[in-house]
Image (cartoon, rainbow, N blue to C red; front, side, top):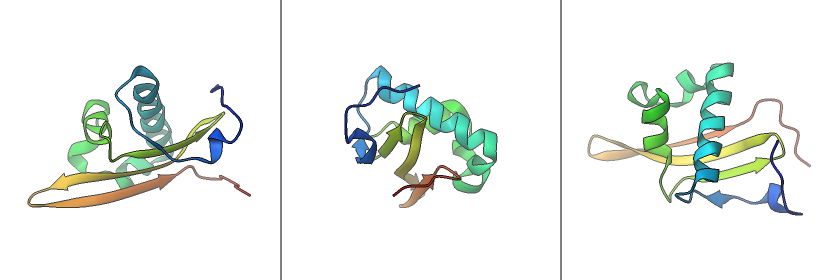
Length: 96
């Protein structure tokens, strides 16, 4: 599904405002929605696709992906006068 350069699947990538990273966020949302992680991980106001992308489309968001798409994500989300930090990894992921 994704084409990678050697070693690219072992790196964390900061979100950049371009279409590739936007598609990664949409793919991430789909994976989290499909396995129920979206409800466990995101605040209720950030679970729709547009709200999810609004939170994660920031330079502080880090993504790791392989040929099957995103397998790890970490982000910060503003909450009242503070911040909530979140992380997700793809279920069943076996990494060396």
